[in-house]
Length: 137
Image (cartoon, rainbow, N blue to C red; front, side, top):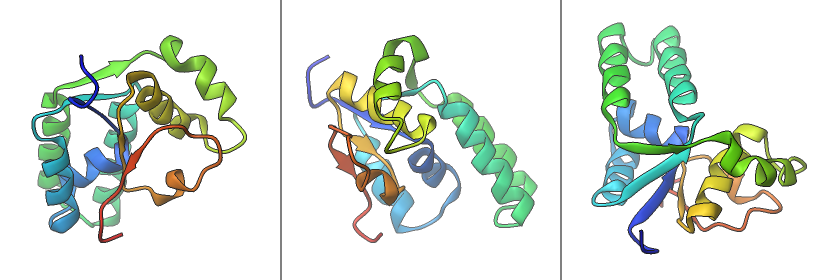
């Protein structure tokens, strides 16, 4: 893989694509288009939990939640194992959660930007990756 054709994604960005209508989802889809996607192996668990949470809150109905979950399973994302990024996750422990550090570590390891809607990550002390966030946030 050459630098430039890969993109790391986190659960916030994937969930936006799957369940949020509007400009943020459109922006995220545009960023993902034509890219090889990479993520932490936490991606599916965290995104499924976001879908579950939004259905329980009533933000989306059960049909939309079920469709989003199926679309999640169909996404072509290469998930890196914990063993690949574990040391970097531990190094970042003072600035971000281990979950968030896993996405940052994947982005750093793949030398790819990290697509996220979680602006807290961009303010963390220690990440060495580029962040792509929606312009409207």
